[in-house]
Image (cartoon, rainbow, N blue to C red; front, side, top):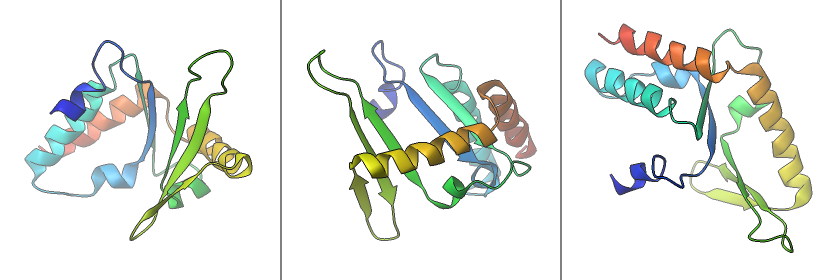
Length: 136
């Protein structure tokens, strides 16, 4: 539970995530567990520091949906140091951290396309709750 508090504490980090509708509908556990998890995500999405987007089935295909990755941006500690930007790419048996400017830029372009194709946070939250209700 301590890890969950990171997102809701006073100095919580800014988090933006894009989830695929297929991942939200894939049954993991019971219908009750699915409903509770989706309702929990919808509740988290109410936090001002959490920006949750859903890439619905109807959105145009975006290459980023096929490549799970996490893009990190750590603000600069002071005016004399640059922000730290890197990407974590998931693979079947391990993951890689990419920090070269070219690689980070490529994933930044993928990220922009993904955000452009996904629903906005309000529509995403509504879809989360709609899907959760289907697990009644």
